[in-house]
Image (cartoon, rainbow, N blue to C red):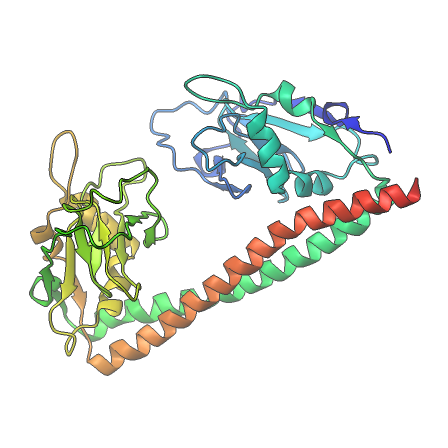
Length: 376
């Protein structure tokens, strides 16, 4: 069984948007989940004429691998649309799809084994990069096209199932959002300030060791992105179950507020700069219902507009308290929360299916190689 150089099957793509046929809506970024995503870059006053055009079946990847969760941000355009990406991205396509299926190659890239070998072959001082030459130099087993089709078919079936489930999840989320917004017409919005109290409790004895950060995208608590000394947490703010914490600095690349509701069973701690608050009367307002409003884009816009500061704009707790939401009877809040909880559970199931679809790539590639050995 002979190894091949991956570069023998690939061709570099340098097609540019020089005629400006594609606009801001066509610009994509690439996530560490190996998919094209809506760009988070500020495109104001940015010329798109040097952006690279990514046709269907084309690939693109970010060469920088350091500080990237030990993953290579690489994506495959499986849509019927053309995208454009930053000129700093490397783009390529399969030269002969009768010898190598692009979908099979994408399965190859989705494996953690590829990430490991790419990180091992990344070079640099301030920023480690995995170059086009390094990619082309990788050794790969290429099974006959019939074997590739067989395993690609399994992968695409799993992916289709995930897509169907995602559609159902999105429909439920849309219904939930519509129901929440309809409450504005039934109940007069009130300032939330009288219903919330800031919790000013410090982890003075450093007994609480569970440290969390806050995500601006998912609006939940996450593992800290930097190393923290577990013995030096005395100044950290304590977050009790169903407390809400947020990062007051709003200015950033996406102008969204990092905010989260604690669903932990035990107390956790967050950065000393993060305000923490709780609902002081749960007979009138439920924290889960409040957080549904604080997760909305409309609250992000409010936070951005009313933030103050020069170098860094911040949202003060008092200003947050002036935000208005409709507050229906508690039984109505409970029914909405039930719908919301179902949505969260469905999203977790979808994430698990999606993760399984990606994890199965290693198994499928191994199966294809094993079958190649039998053929030989």
